[in-house]
Image 1: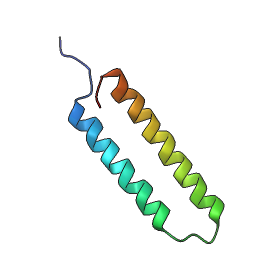
Image 2 (image 1 turned 45 degrees about the vertical axis):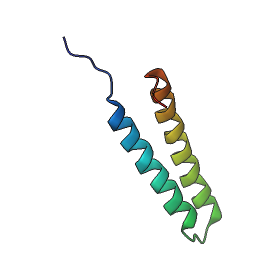
Image 3 (image 1 turned 180 degrees about the vertical axis):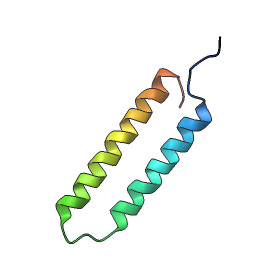
Amino acid sequence: MESIKIPKRIIKKQLKNVNKAIIEIAEMKFVNIEEKEEKLDALVFLKNQILRKAEKLEIK
């Protein structure tokens, strides 16, 4: 039976993509600052989920 663990490389790639998106959103200029905050909050939440997954797999 195969393991259903997510490979470390996939988690690292996900973190890299989320970090890149956070930087891009932070650098963008929004007319409505609340929209920017919502997008950043969502990305930070996603990053925290990925980090929790990584912690379970003991990835640092």
